[in-house]
Every structure is written in C-alpha cells, then in structure tokens.
Length: 82
Image 1: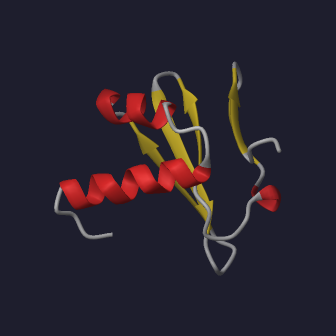
Image 2: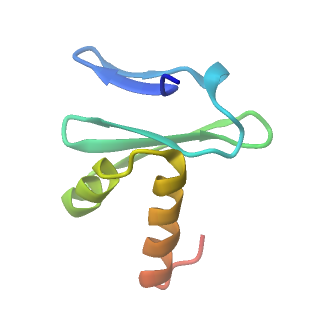
C-alpha cells in the first residue's frame, strides 16, 4: 500500500482520502519529518519535526505501528502527557 503522505522534489503530498482514521503516517522531506493523521471527525492533523535526533529515529520506523510505539515510548521517557 502506498502511504497517504509522500514527498518528492516539489514538496509534500497528502492524500487524506487514503488515510485510516486515528492512524499515524509520516514521511521525510529536507531533513524534517512530517507526521499526519485523520482524527475521528475526519480532520487532518499535521506536525513537522525538525529535531535531528527524533527525525533519525522516525526514519527507522517502517510501519505506522512502529511509529506509534516509538512516540508512546518517547512520551513516557520525557514524562510528557499525550
């Protein structure tokens, strides 16, 4: 399956119609990670991550499940509430 978020030389492309609700997607563009998900009300939520350490770890995630697990662990390690 092709990811609903992709990047090419022209920039980042979103295809929210291909997104499952409450599932996190990502792509890397110009050393930044772009995260996106469609919430239960079909609103597209997007986040840009510039921290290089986080971007490198996000690059290692090959599935949405891995990405969500990474962020769950990250939030717990930082004592942040989601």
